[in-house]
Length: 233
View (spheres, rainbow, N blue to C red):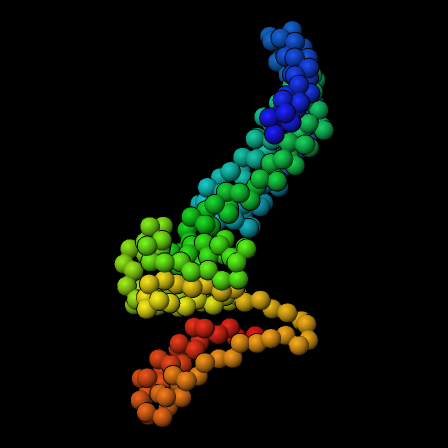
């Protein structure tokens, strides 16, 4: 990697020196802006205004950023013109700047969405990052508390959280395991193949509750089955 970095630095060295030497001769000369760039600026400004008005929360930070993307693109196009050793900001510079701005335009929206997520949504997302190489994962109460998902990690709170996780994430199964010591997450793997294997639902607790005639026990058993089952699969 060090050799590759050194080679990349050498390849850029001549270009940087060339740009620097040229721009030093233009230190007192401001960049001009072509008429076409002004036209594009006006069009992009109108576009950003419409996007905010019809598709975004007007009070959000992402909306504020979107409102000013045309100005951000103009400043960036100036940098492109400088690197291109051009005395004028041309149409292609502004187009490249708009493309770059658009490629990052969703970042703040995604950040705000993640920032406003509830604790169970963040926990579910965290579980998704853990199962990239594993069929199932277990997150113990220490990790749950340390990462700020729950302040109180009693079994009742864990049960409440997996109920909420199940409503948020329809593609996974959440279970309290180890007598309240951890939460296990297992993503549902769907397949169109014939002869796929299956996992039967354990109805022993429900059967016992039905035999006892205890309506509350029946409700609890049904709820336990529902928490470990995905509809439509």
